[in-house]
Amino acid sequence: MKALKRQHLSPRFSGKGLFLGFLCLGSGYFHATAAENDNNAAYWRELASQRITAEKERAAAESDWSLQKALLEQRIALLKSEAQTLDADMAKLKENEAKASQERKAFEETLATLKSETDAARKLLARAENALAERYTLLPPYLQKKIYPALNGLDAAAADKKPFAERVQNLVSALNEIEKSRMKIAVQREAIQPSGNENPLQMRIAYLGIDFAYATDESDSVAYMGYAKGGQWHWQAIPEQKDTVSRLFNIFDNREQAIWLDIPLSREVQP
Image 1: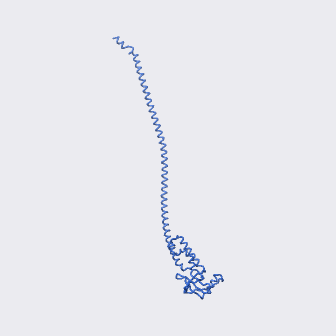
Image 2: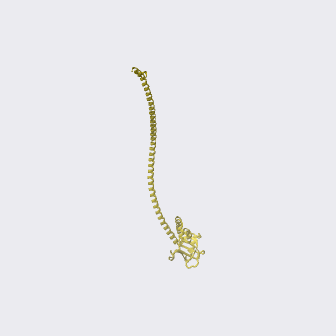
Image 3: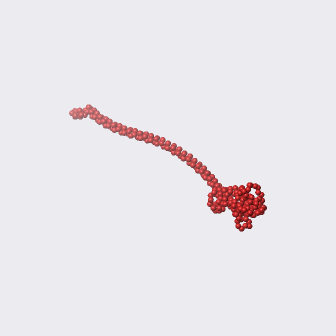
C-alpha cells in the first residue's frame, strides 16, 4: 500500500509537476488570448478605418452638397431675377400692345375719316370739272385751247383714271388761266360765225376779259361785237363803230398812241 502511494506520488505528479503543467497550460491560454486580441485589434482597426473613410466620404459629400447648394441657390436667385425681368418685360409688352392697339384704332379712324374726306373731295372735284366743262364753250376759243389738256379732253372716264392729285393740279391750272384771261385783253386771229352769215369769217379779235370781244377784218371794213351767251359766242355787226374798233386794233398794234375810246354796248347784246 505504501508502495502504491509512492507510485502515485511519483515525481511526474508531484506538486512541482502540477505547477509546471498549469504554467504550461496558462502560457498556452495567454498565447491564445493574445492572438485573439490581435485579431480583435485588427478588426477594430479595420472598422475604425471604415468609419473614418465613411466619415470622410460623408464630409466630402456634405462639402459637395454645400457647394452644390450654394450654386443651386445662386441659380435660383438668378432664375427669380430673370423671371422678374420677364414679368416686367411682359407687363411692358402688354402696355405697348394696348398702346399700339389704341394707336392702330386711332389710325384706322383717321384713315376712315381721310377716306371719307377723299371721297367727298373727289365728288367735289368731279362737280368742279363738270362745271368748268359746262363753262368751257363760253370761253374764248384761244382760252379753250389752253385749258383743254387740263380738262382731260372733257372726258370724264379718262379723268377718273388719272391720279387725284394730278386732276386737282389740272383743275387749278385751268382756273388760273381763266382768272388771268379775265383780267387782260387778248388779241387773236380767229374765224367767227356772225349772225346771218353762212360761212365763217377770218377776223382779228380783241377779247376784253373772257365774256366780251370786238372783231374786224384785215381791211377794217366791218366791225363786230361778240359776247358769250346760251352756251356759245354770238357776233353782231356794229357798222357804226367800225372806225372806233379799227382804232382799238391800231392801238393794240402800236400804230396809234393809247387813248380813251368810247365804245358803247347796246342793251340787246349786253351779256
